[in-house]
Image (tube, rainbow, N blue to C red; front, side):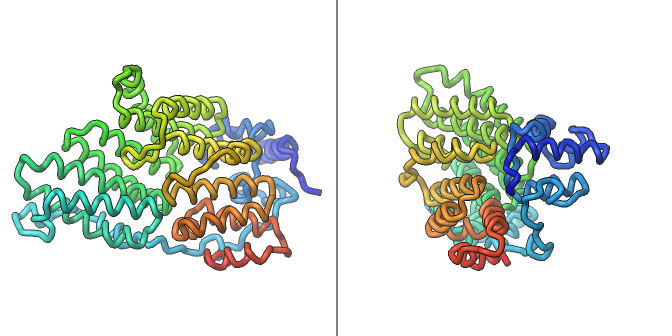
Length: 411
């Protein structure tokens, strides 16, 4: 019989922890989670459904997955878990390496140094379009040549043009950071976000600085450095919140404040802090209602719909699959980018997987794949869900799931 009672699982984890001579703090450190999360798991408040998390708990406790939860599937074979996945960002990673325009320091002419701001602006807009469409191979090819061009141009341009070029440089590095985060290259994302922040400050654009912090916070989240992510997001919220009290606060500024509240909601959900998660979702909802429409300021796609997408995602992270599916039933994401729509469907699939609704989860993943195949094939969350669904299915893996796993190179 399936052991689906989170209280029983929590008590078992508590017993295993004590048998291992570990405190809640020790287990939290080993899991890269908070003590609060461990406490909620042990009390049955925070359900643990995903096999990947069960495996991590088992590893931290020095036991098997079945010791943690007897009904769990067998652990993955090491070669399957470590199978590399190409994310098509290799060229962009190389472009990020070293000094961005070394020849300029020696007054050597460089390709792209004569590009006009209008030409570069058009190219930056194009790569952001590729990011929103989750077309990472094309993005990598374009951006790996665009970044050196902008770096060369800003160093050779007249002083009167440098502010705009620094702004474009900030936006170009922001899209690089966003792409790296989505494709699980968090170290490169951090570098790109840091360069974006520096460029934004040189441009004298404080809102671009905040937008760069937004990308940096997501890089930290992906690195599981939640304290640093929270510091970056909370600092921005602290500065922007009093400014938002003015009726004349620009919508672009409100969008960034709302987006940063969503970052804080994600962080708190990952840490198992329900009250704080719902608080930040509520604050983002209020800001979105004030805007009254879906927008894309600083390429955040902030607005009422994106808030609800995050409400679904954070509910899944908290283990509240029922709430996630209830919210999802009332969301129409078709006005957002392919990337956002695919991510929404991935979170719907995650919710169904938590309830072991294999058919519904696979259907959502296949719909997401149609929208953004590169994203679904390589994103760590989609790969985790597919592996979990295969494990749950045992010897009766449905044909659509088996075919999807094959397309994703999950053996």
